Figure 1 (cartoon, rainbow, N blue to C red):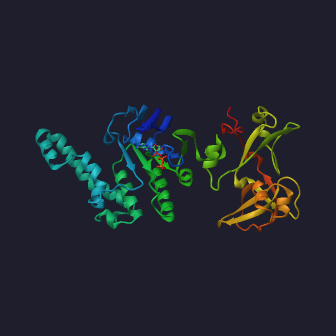
Figure 2 (figure 1 turned 180 degrees about the vertical axis):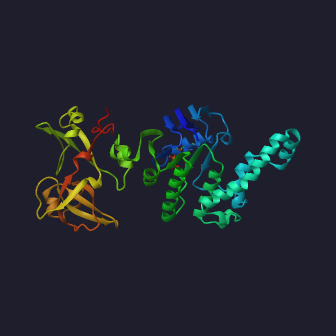
Figure 3 (figure 1 turned 90 degrees about the vertical axis):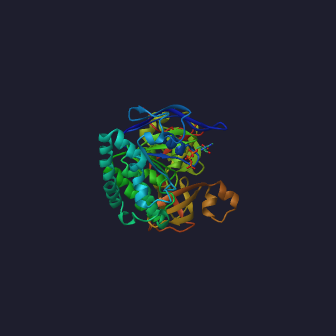
Length: 408
Ligand code: ATP
């Protein structure tokens, strides 16, 4: 086991493509850390630099106490599992899993004969370790439930089985660090769920440092002890799943983490009797007093963007339209365990006369709200919205910074 540190690391590809820009990151010994971000944000490049598959342009990478810039991948004591499994097609499952250890302990027959002649004690040690390979492979295969597949070739396996073999090949080597590059994205939804659980259990059992790349935020939230959210080659936020979900430092993180995504509404800040409110057409949200010290520093009527998660909006049916925070249900998406309601908030006309013109409808503020699976609502219903003030965020319209976070 080992920690992994990246100190001011950048990667520029030929053609002046800045893939990773000056990132600092410390993965604790035994930690499960997830790199999360949209396609092209630099997560795979970061992982590949840790693995030694891409050279670092600037900065320093350490595995444990050792600076590994310039150290060959095979000498870094890491094992990497890829999205496409990368199994050797001409080798059986057993050979695939044993290959790394066989290389480590003795190489080819000629090399071993030479060792026996030149240093018999070392050769005897190596021979003992080679005898242990079969047992190590068998035990790992048993843990992953692929023992019965050891004699098959990769082409005779399903996608899930191949992924298990790829995992097994990494585990059997007992590396100091596991690196995963979207290892589950080729699997169907059910298998992904199963493998996700197995990966979580594997980490608990082995307690080995794991760095895991994904663009799937559910995977990141369920597997990661900490998540690193990346965008455009830079780290946006590092935190536990709860921190990045509840305390996003920027609009980018707030919008990327969470499904369905957070609602964003442009508007302004108003203050009356020392209470702060967010105002937009048809909306007036009184903000939590806990946020007052942070909000007091902002200018009255400053342009801001509201961020509110679908589960933080409470929807109540009402008979007639009545002022602010009212709207009408324009779409219902039943998801089984909940329903998503799309609410058009705004002018009375839009709410009362749902069949207004497209132009008028587009002008309304649209919010997605999460309600219980058996909520009794139909399209066109008049609703009143209440907001969980503790969980409301305001973002700077220029920098995207979260203005409601107490950063002290
Ligand atoms: P994805 O989820 O799609 O794999 P990613 O976040 O892993 O994306 P990277 O593969 O790290 O992104 O790529 C980061 C940026 O570097 C992208 O703009 C990509 O086009 C660029 N890039 C990656 N590899 C190379 C390369 N060999 N040569 C030039 N540019 C590259």
